[in-house]
Length: 290
Image (cartoon, rainbow, N blue to C red):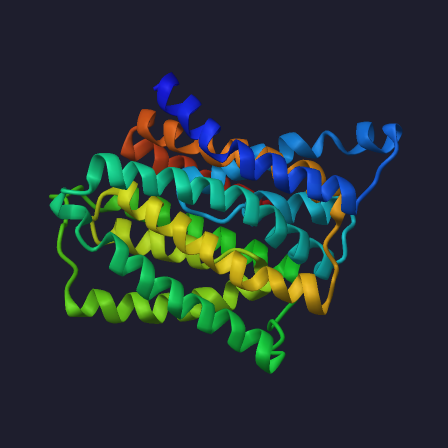
């Protein structure tokens, strides 16, 4: 385990160092400012560990934190997108290596690449439809995010507590492909509004359909990574609301968290992972609503 973790860290270290040095050039900070913002390193790490061990986007952690810190809605979404470009990419690389090394010949994973291609394409279409038509969310960020998290968490609890575990599914039916298209289109639109959405929805669908949990998580992570990269340009080029001082530290933390996440998944039981995911979603949703 330790050797695999070290190998993963070494493989992404050059990308990590290059991006961090670029950010330092773009956002020059004094020593006092560096000390003030360094705590965001741990926020980025925590968000990426959660995101890449459950398939949920890192915004599940970042958005409540940024709301608490008084960010505007646009700043919160833009900064969350930017941080996830670090963490979800590191997680996607790590999960894809896991597939190539350990699951390439597994029958349950034979459609891994095709699922990612289909879901990513539909997610990006949904995302850019919202951006292109300037389609506004039906309510405020805080309200939408809280209810989205709460309902999703309750749904997972209901599945874990009331449905019996069956045999692992290894084949996607025509109905599943159509469902993934619809879920990804809708999830991409939600991601444009909340910076999270498509990963959670895809992961939950695959888990409910009794596919391997690691397959569901890895697909969700890779699709989320592609989606946030497709969406971050809206915030880099058009609204330009990324909080760069936060990104300077949360981004590198997210890289480390994205690499550590797979190790956590492999050491948690399937039931514990589902309950952990559901508990956090219900908690942040309930706190936001109340």
